[in-house]
Structures are given as structure tokens and as C-alpha cells.
Amino acid sequence: MARLKNKVVIITGAAQGMGAAHARLFIAEGARVVLTDLNEEKGSALATELGENALFIQQNVTNEKDWARVISTTEQHFGAVNVLVNNAGITMVSSIQNTSLEAYRRILDINQVSVFLGMKAILPSMKKAQGGSIVNVSSINGLVGGAIGYTDSKFAVRGMTKAAALEYAAFNIRVNSVHPGVIETPMIMQGDTKAAVEAFAKTIPLKRMAKPEEVSSLVLYLASDDSSYSTGAEFVVDGGITCQ
Image 1 (cartoon, rainbow, N blue to C red):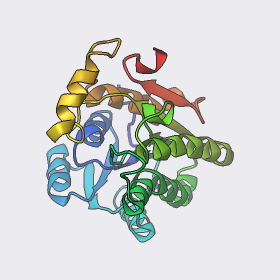
Image 2: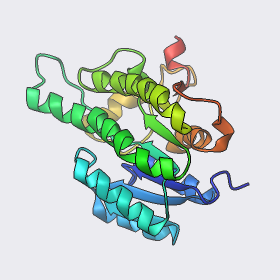
Image 3: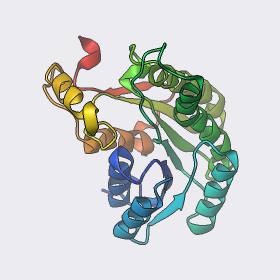
Image 4: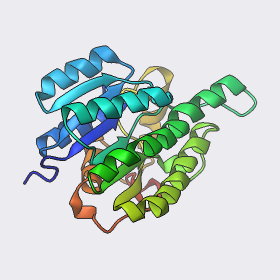
């Protein structure tokens, strides 16, 4: 069954990792998907692979004008937007004392401010569509403590989701947050991080990292009409980490 048949979707940070997994599943479920990312080479290649129902647009998610351009182009190609997945994000592992103000503001801009800009920019288009679903990708570090900067921004996404859910309910727009645990993506499976992540994975109750596709299944549920009475809620996909 095509659970997203004819729905128009924007997914940020979609050139690789979780975003790419979301895009593949959404296309398979009948959606018309706009993939955005700074990485033009990988994003364009993925859109070509996915076919005529996929379109890549290079985007800086921290830039308000870029958001306006992405939504305008999406409407020109596919129509009013039904679903926005705020997936773009970066990680940072640093102590408070070793974190510069520049680095701190950068992670807040990408992980937090971009979500605000996306939710603000998408409202007129979703009003045209007479409703929609916004899925904000946070983290388990939006529920429990972790590294400075990353934790702060992901807790903020959780709060922003609830604020937007209350405001946007009047327009039949649902807003929910997804909180992944340790996901096997290029962002964490590199350099010194890889060994640390693999060691930590052994402490997870399910004894493994998640595949990006396992998060995509949850994001699909929230994007689809199957979750029509869920808004302002946190959906956790972490293998049991936060229940320990």
C-alpha cells in the first residue's frame, strides 16, 4: 500500500545517511520528494537514482532565503507541501571549556535554528494543502544529557516541536519529534568516533546500532495519515537506551 501516495515531501539533509533512507522509503510509498542538502554531488546522484518523483535542491538550512527558494521551487514542480522532515543536523563532541563560541553557535544554527526556519517557512504552503505533518528529527540527547551544543540543540528541537504543535493544530498541521539513538550513519561511523560508537553499541539493551531504515519506518508513520491523532509528541527509536 502506498501510504504517502501523491503527498509532496521536503526532506532536509537528504544526500546521505538517515535523510537518504527516508527519501528512498518515501518514494517507494508513493510520495513526490524534494531532497535538500549542501552536498550537491551526492544529493543530485540520489535524486537521479530515485527517478522522476524526486528532485534535489541545494540548500543551506540556516538561510531564510534558501528556505523560501526551496518551498517555491517545490510548489512549482510538485504542488503544495504536505510533509516536512527537518532531518539536517551535525554532531559535536567537546567539553564546555574546549568549545568556542563560534563552534557553539554553528551547531545551534544547524540543529536548532534551521528547524525554526523550516517550520516558519512551510506554513503558507501547508495551509494551501489544507494540512500536513512536520517531523523534527531530534535525538535521545533531546531527552537525556550528552555533549554540550548537541544536547542543547536537540532539547530545543523537542520544545520547539511542542510549541509549534499547539500553534499549528488550528491549521490541521501535526508536529512531532523523533529521537533516534545510535544510528549507523556516515556522520558517526568515521575517524575516532567509529571505535567509540561500536564500543558503546555493546551496552545498548538490543546490543546493536540501528540501521537508518529503522528510523525511516517511524518517520514514515508520522508523515502518513496513520498517525492522524498524534501531535506534539516524542517518538523514541533507541534500542532501549533511555529505559536503562
